[in-house]
Amino acid sequence: MIQCKDCELCEMGPDGRRTFKCDPFVNIKEAECIAKWQLIRLDMLVANYQRMLKWYDKLAPLQDKMFKYMKREIEDIDESEGWKLEEEEEENK
Image 1 (tube, helix red, strand yellow):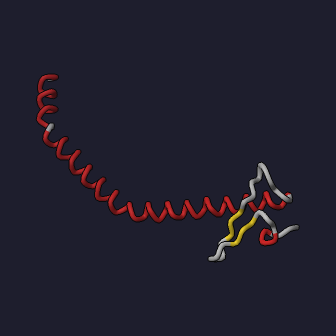
Image 2 (tube, one colour; image 1 turned 45 degrees about the horizontal axis):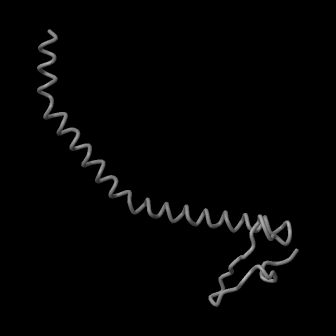
Image 3 (cartoon, helix red, strand yellow; image 1 turned 90 degrees about the horizontal axis):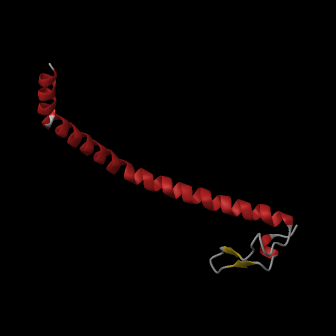
């Protein structure tokens, strides 16, 4: 099995990051390359998901404040329109 570092489709950057030029639909050298490519993509998905969760954690306090404010507004509207319900109940009697 060829190692990615030895493949001509892998380039090492000055900071040590690897850039893969392989495409599983076009230029895969070995069958194991597909499994490696899948692992790389899965790792990217997990990293993006973790970033999204951190972002949601930052938004959670703001969401709580918004929900409390909206609940208060809805309760105020219900309270201010309570007289309409009282009139309808009197008419139905």
